[in-house]
Length: 318
Image (cartoon, rainbow, N blue to C red):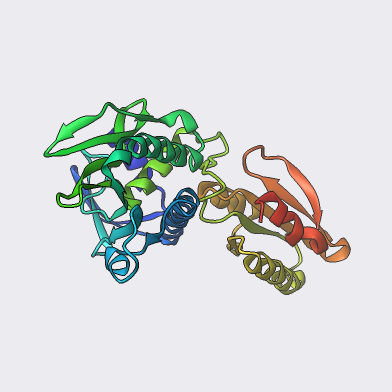
């Protein structure tokens, strides 16, 4: 397991190591990691809303509920954020120390608790499968009774071990009203490591970090290819226009690293899990056509700049 964790922490575009010894590593999250965690969080919120909006209100915290009509069932979200920018990873564990906690809590009458307990196990397992490239990675363990609560864990099963990614619990919320609380609790930092471990397990020979397109930090990156420096400024302006259109359509894009060679730019994009690389060159200035490289297949297709933002939207169902 230590070897696998070191592979993750050595993703230089995602992490910056600060202190390193045989048992522990201190590190910070670089922008791709931060964006990936944000995407996981947003997808979690959308999924939660989709599963609850027809059945109950969900509040951003319990205090908001107390100011509103107290109808049961209802839900509220809690998040305990990581208090420091520097994280510590004990290499005997798959997860960093002192991670944040994100939870959906649902208050339910006693008569409905078991039905919802089973239902939300399916919901949460499906969600984890929907944001990874290996849907079969996840399973649910047997129910346990601990400290007046029942719980199950959703597990990620890798060849080097099985690790809990989320806990679903039921416990009595209010003895007087006999209501129960169902909680689904996970960590964004832990999710980050599971997603990257899964991506590395599907690493291609081209060193493509295979991330699900729903949550990859950057969906499209640009690559420059030019021989005459006179065209550099014109290409830069063209790429900036295309970049702005993608951002306007809420498609996360990445500008090219210059003066890196085109091959180095593509390799860097693959290592960050970028889904597509748009390769613009001097012929693009003449006819408006560029090549769009699919990171999964390494095949290229020709796209015209006038059609690009609409085509990109169709690729990602926006």
